[in-house]
Image (cartoon, rainbow over the protein chains, first blue to last red):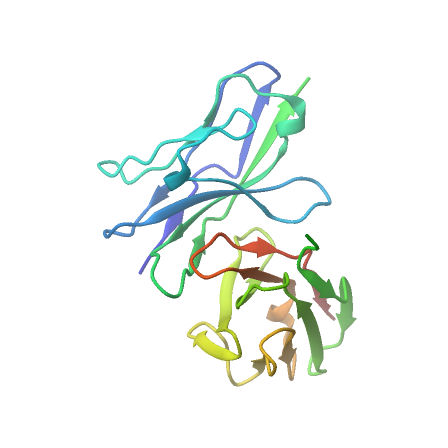
Length: 110
Length: 112
């Protein structure tokens, strides 16, 4: 069965420090990987997807098929980055079904 | 564009009672999803509709949960009878075919 693992429940960093939120997936085919973010009192929203290969709000994520990882990175954290981050995997196809990880709470301290 | 609308935002019921949630997807989005998010976990797909047909309901506890999307637009999710373990946030999402999903604010359900 597909499984997405986010090993850290909480990641606390200081403003300006680098951030790396870890995500490992299990699907052996050609997965689509996503990062969703939920800011306080806001709805879950898409941050980025691996096929777009773009940087959103300074965040990037590279799909590493050898390590089955899709870690989210930002070189300099900002206080407004504090939020819950969910990694998700889809096997694509007609269903486009998302499998979510358990999420990591990023807390950026001033 | 208007986002995915859900109601109610909060619901408190006693176990064995019934409850219903409503979702209005983004206009034009043929695919609609219902997720259950238990505290401390990521969202888990319960059911997926493509227009008014069910695509995937493999994780839906069909003995107590039901969902419909009769006209291919709005959808309702019902729980009858509710159990304590159904306490969760119920999220609705919609998408164009093969495109990223857009989520609503969710309904927070508490079972007493």
